[in-house]
Length: 364
Image 1: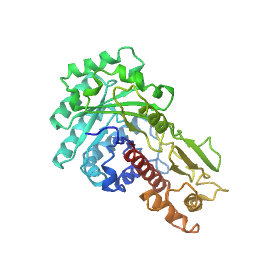
Image 2: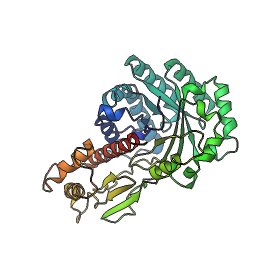
Image 3: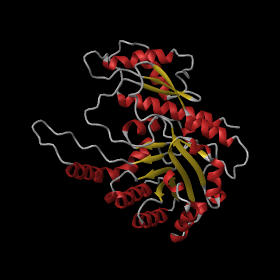
Image 4: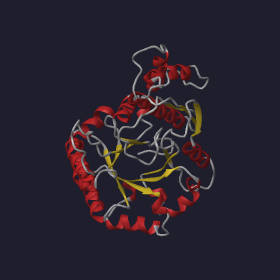
């Protein structure tokens, strides 16, 4: 399907992420195959005078909401992404819904002519693995095997992979291998070791390495402009330019999100912040919380956008939808159309995707 000059971002299937994908142009989409992670819906907050629900009741409510949403996901994929190949991972979904959820998604997706490739991992139960493999074989688009750090902490990783392939009668040439270290650290700098641990590395349809370097949140940043190294990108680029690799992996990251998913905190006060990718760093424009007596609230967004659009490293309004949005909002710091956390996350993710696509497409 693709080689090193490609990009595999991992995105949670939420509003900002969907819209960020939608705003990519057709040429940009040729360089990208996203992994979308389906997450459990947040239960509605209790109404006034309504008794708070216990965790079991909240989970039951979330499950019922997702049951309704699951068959609609292929239509959303068609709307926001189109018919290009896309990986789908249900690992964050409650275990009771995973098999039935994938079945519905693949069935509707097939009727729409979509190329949806299910993601499987070695940590799942044998029942889930066997069900997913059966559904994937029926779907006939291939399977993505996603390996995590915990898999490589075992000395049996090579045998575990071979056992998985043998048990389910799978052909490596029809499988995509995704190695996800999640947090970028020193272990991500050992691609040569990784190459040796994976059996028959050259036979896999694709081979991707993913990690993420963006912080969990911005609470440790003061209200100001900061720089954060894009270690996920720089560690990958430094290694693929070195000799001695049996196979060079495709690059993947978590864009401007933390690689470990945490449920949003009820009643949280998000800051008016902008996240912006540069060549090997991010600019983090940390604002005040949107709510508070001394906060300038949503008016911080256009003010920060104006500062960013005048920054020497701003890519220019024509670079991406996200850049156009930043430039537009920065024209008038008194505008009432300030944007929201959702629209600013959309702009930041869209710019990040466009930035990496530009970098990938210009590799020698």
